[in-house]
Image 1 (cartoon, rainbow, N blue to C red):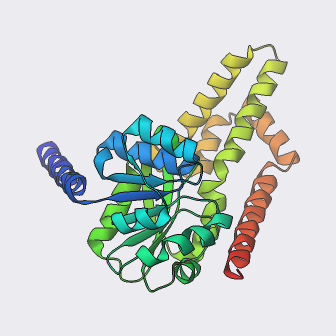
Image 2: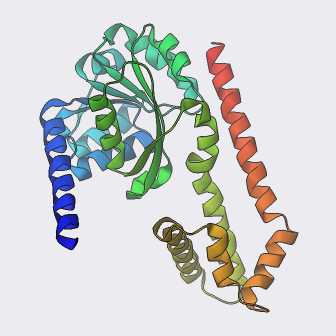
Amino acid sequence: MDQLDAIKGWTYCSVRIMRIGEMCMQTRIGFIGTGNMGASILRGILRSGTVGHENIYIFDTDKNKMEALAKETGVTACSGNAELARICDYIILAVKPAAVPQALAEAKDSFTDEKVLVSIAAGISIDSLRRHAGGDIKIVRTMPNLPLMVGEGMTVISFGDRISEEEKRTVKELFRSSGEAEELDEKLMNEVIALTSSSPAYVFMMIEAMADGAVQQGIPRQAAYKLAAQAVLGSAKMVLETGLHPAELKDRVCSPAGTTIEAVNELEKCGFRHAIMSAMKACTDRAAEIGRSTESR
């Protein structure tokens, strides 16, 4: 069985390497917007070798930022959104939601039936993107999160009409360059924003609060940040790798009449779960509001 597993693993790796090789030779990727998310996705693609720098093109209204990224990575800076869309096979729309209508208006005459538009804009539906792009083009809606900056991102993907299986694989490979990618129905995309895209902020706040509590007890601050962050990282890894319910893992830490159950009791009294669930609902509601405001433009 071990040999069989090894053969399966080798075969999977070989197939993935062949796909990456095909993408490096043939696929041209464009980034409209080079902020934190766009630049991080780009760097992940380059680190993985999924696509070479000679096949990546960028445009940003901030010329200094665009030129600095081009100099750092060796990718090609374009003169505008229309030029980028004309050159590229996959166009990653990595601008803020409010900038989407203008960016697509500038690029729409360059879209063809063969190109794939990949949006990371929060709250904006595939139908709204299609309307702003001015035609029945191939559209993919994604929701990545900031940990892709360190290769541990979580990107959720919804595919529009007429996306081929090969195009789906390509899009997934692009985002898996920086972490994990999963396909989900678009109707759940606003909920996903609260669960994966915005949630790193909640976790950062928790790490900061844990460190503050440690400092209050006399632990040096830099040590406190490291200890808290590693505890969160290890806990998340246990959920992913053991397959056990989070409640079962929590119970394993809580010894009878021990220290942890006292901490859990305080968290419950302070509404820890309710605060997180309320925050997620507020986030989802705001995503829907952003979508409605964009559709009205």
